[in-house]
Image (cartoon, rainbow over all chains, first blue to last red; front, side):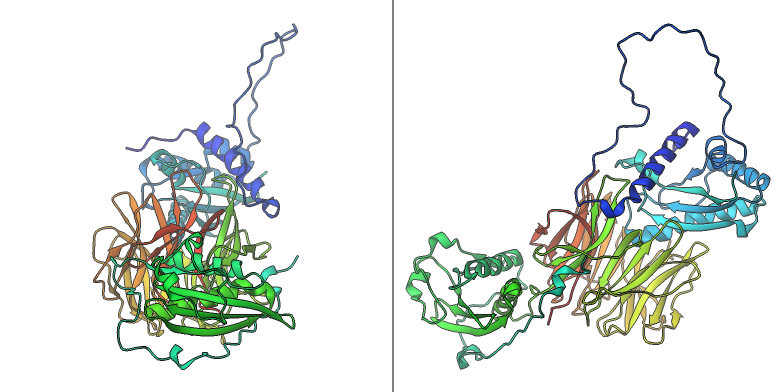
Length: 187
Length: 437
């Protein structure tokens, strides 16, 4: 049994993904040496001094703007996971994909691209094919739940864009996924 | 920025002027030294390569020595042990002094510079017979002294093994940098001994993958993977010219040249199904070769161009299949337990190299095209993507340790000589060039 992935983990992974994307933008400056790994998200330095006394300030989380990409990522979830060498939609992925379909039906001008990914335990070209199958499984599922097919593109990144840089079953599980990326039309 | 800096040097003018004596061309009927390339238990041949006389003579001898050593077939002796010193190509060696240190073969030479051209005379000797086996002269521009050394290495290898060499070749690969998960991939090229590495400029390509050499020209084909699309390209290493093979109705990947360089076979994925196509490069028309609902990818032609080996999971797991170059008569050739991918036909046609996954490990292996005589040459956490040296004796591939970057490694077809490539950086997807002209 593969453990389920909660939405906060997913959100953290998205941040890692964004960091990876921004790094890729600097590709030309990169030298053939290894960049220092960024500290894990959420790590803070403990403070020793006491904060100055101030009156209480109320704060309420208002959440993401409905229909925004952030709304989709945080409140729906953009990634589902697969078993080894499989492209079958798992039972534990169906509620999330049902929610994706509902959100996409509600915000009908949004275009998405499903990105299929594979873990490192396969060779490059086969994994491109496998990632493509995963992306198309998600696409077919969403179409089956009423999302118009021409709103959904697909691409496979094979094993080229792991969300978890580690090696081991937990990392591989995280990297066997399909991500629904919003291309346009979100608020 | 130059496109391919190392290629802008003056073109090499190799004049293979003459075999200096008739002796060089005739093989004595008995007792001559030779290196048996097919015996896995053979001891490497002790060989002496003293510094050549003249400018860069020591450097040239060093490159030759390193090449022969890396082949695993030769054991270059320590120059400190040499008794006879300052040997030039103009004098006969004192064989006794080379017998004394047990050198069976001796390579000596002299470098002269004339009219701006480097001239290298060298001789190969059978020490115990006291016979000259080779006498050749190469000329080149002085910057290309390493290539002269590679040419001499190839001549020595061929004379002593009876097979073509592979030292005057280059390797295109994917140079990787950056932490895992944020890796930047760039096409790069280096000599087969890791010297002269330089990047190939392919701006806007995103993630570059799977470069493959043409066996007839200084051209590669490779794949570019971007955020929303993929493309396959031709890239001319002499001009730096890059050309897309066009738009396809789906994701395109896994390009590889036909042996005559006139076609490229590749995969196109549509609706989750990957099939194999072939494009005629002069007409730019594509033909579909497979239409199975399974994954069909990684096509590689037989050296005569008549057949294609590829990966398919039509049996439920990835295995190797061979079909006619027109797509006819596909049949499975891999038989053992495990997953087989990345087949590559050897330049001699004798073997197919592949990556095999079994028991949580990855292997580089070879088998005959009928599926028999499978030999696993390596075992590790992740070995992948073999490419053949042009003489079919050595394979290069990439190896990863858990959490580590990929590195380039090589192994001979007997599985005896497994070693990292002398290139310090991270690299993957190596592609070995044919012998240079």
